[in-house]
Amino acid sequence: MFKQYFGLAENPFNLTPDPKYLYLSEVHREALAHLQYGIEQRKGFVLITGEVGAGKTTICRTLLGMLPRETHTALILHPSLSELELLQAINQEFGLEAEHTSKKSLLDDLYAFLLNIRAQGHNAVLVIDECQNLAPGVLEQVRMLSNLETDKEKLLQILLIGQPELAKMLSSPNLKQINDRIVLRYHMGPLNERDTQEYIAHRLMVAGSHGDIKFNSSAIRKIYRYSSGLPRKINAVAERAMLITYLKGKRIINAPSTREAIKELRGEYNRPSWVQRFTAPAFFLLSCVILILALGIFWPSLFSEIGQRFETPNVSAELTVTQPAQDASQEIPVKNDWTIPDYGKALELLYQVPGGLKGPDLLNLHPDPECLALIDRPFISAVQNGYAIVLEVSDDVTKVMSADSQEIEVSLEQFRQVYKWNIILNYTRDENEGIRMLSDSGEDVQRYQSVLHRNGYLTIEPSGIYGIETVRGVERLQETFGLHRDGIIGPETRELLTIIGETMS
Image 1 (cartoon, one colour):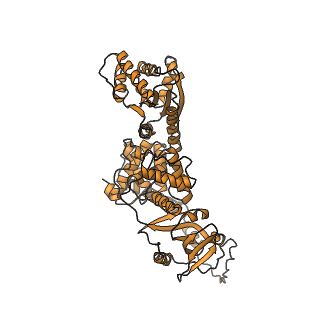
Image 2 (cartoon, rainbow, N blue to C red):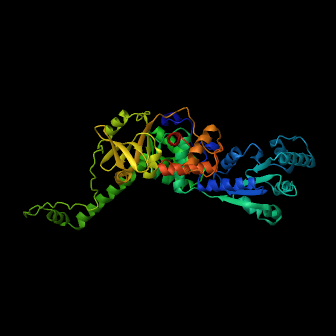
Image 3 (cartoon, rainbow, N blue to C red):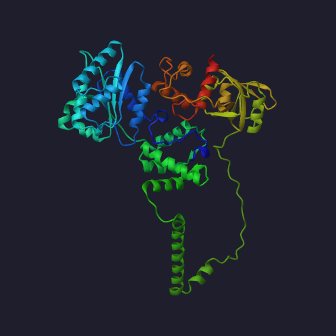
């Protein structure tokens, strides 16, 4: 309903787990790292727990999308099954015959399959979500699957995902054998308030926002307090708050809309808002009137005494104006011939420079002065007392353009003294280019990785697979240049990588 109003391609806060919306907080990174390590090192059992709505299922789906083709997977999402039904479901997921009613036949087929793919250098992973719903007998059957092994390694890697009560179940004496075999464990805690804000911004961007949809700080605070940092509850209240904002014809999601959304989700349907708005002030005014009347009765001279106190005294006074002292910390202007005081004039001059006009969209960056040499394109820089048209930056010289279009060379040290850590470039946003994120792959991913690698943001060799290390490399780049730090190659990050790539070529 509100998608068109806010200019979104889809609802950013759907409750269904979608890997492309995964926000990699520290919690999610560590959970993914545990799962990946357990699979790569063939550890057998890995346990991941978390509260309802913590993002466990999304992590599962993301993991499956990241695994190489040589990894065969079986995902069990609804484990309220009998021992026989579980084996049938696992074999079916692996593409095996699942009609047998004999557990031995099913296990024999599975064991033969695992031996065959291991001989080809492949791996097999079984993911069971919502494991707290498994009966003790079924959990014991899962333990038996870990016996499918060779003399050297496990043939089947088993990932158990569930709510916190799963850990309590496994600690019971009758499940001691399976509990002892779990070598990697991780509990997914909630997001903190800052992560909550970045999580909302991330989902909006993936859904098509260009940064123009705003949840103000009060709304974020209320969402965090209501949700306790659980993504599913964040989604529910954020979606409802956006709908209420849309119905009110507003653009910024604020505290009142969020408060109303929370009340609706809690099922609190109180008095109409106009009653709440006027009851308290009316009560306050009535109390003041009663108090004044009571004072007038018991202290008749009160009002005359007050009047005397506020009479204007007949005293002549001379006004003295004191000039404030100059603030010693006030910025001392640095005079030069190339500072342009007006931004509009600076933009007009930029468009006159060859290569200065690249499109109608603006890229606003905040790089360290040392990184300016990576921008091989004319740009506007914020400097003390105005703006500068920067034509080129080398290791020790900065070429700028004066207001009368003269090229001037200044030392990098001199430029650094007035530089205000803000530059603006223009470009053309390609609406047909999708975003690139965790689990994506392709030639363009490898090209971006090459740019990151050559500039020290990526430690691994470019592979064309967007893994955790690539996410971290993109985040480092975004942090260096002052872009939103989300580990995703969206329009602005893609343009920055393109510019840096052009500089290197």
